[in-house]
Amino acid sequence: MAISLKLSKRHAIETQSILRENQNEDWSFDLPVLLLDRPWLKLEKLSLAELFFRIPPDFSEELPEIIFYNELIKQGKTLLTAAQECWYEFGMEDFYRALRHRWTVVDCGNNGWTYKKYIALINQYQFNIEKAINKIPLIILAYPDSKENHKLLWIQKDDL
Image (cartoon, rainbow, N blue to C red; front, top):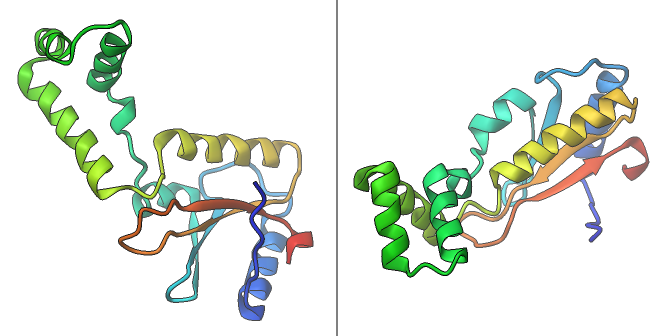
């Protein structure tokens, strides 16, 4: 699915400047990532390393307790039996902590920013740098308090 992007003139000039700076860079976690905050029309540049702290990815589906629980359910175990096996394997407190964290994310949302999407961004960025493809990630932030997902675009000079 292609997402069209219309940046303001000021944001387009700023992005072009960042693309020029990024040209011929070596791979590192200091490479730029752009965040577009639509309600405030603010374009923020931060490093890939800072992205993890600015928009923490949702790890809830990657927790070993949740992976084990989901596998037991897929095997046809009842919810109670699966929970009991998780209690035995991980301890009741740790299992319920993981379950609560998962349900908090389900209830409150994380705008679809998962660990898998975060890792995919890193892998794509590294691939682009290694192949001398000058594209930088732009994350269009979801509106606050919405169930909408953040959108990831890869911006290059021709897009501006």
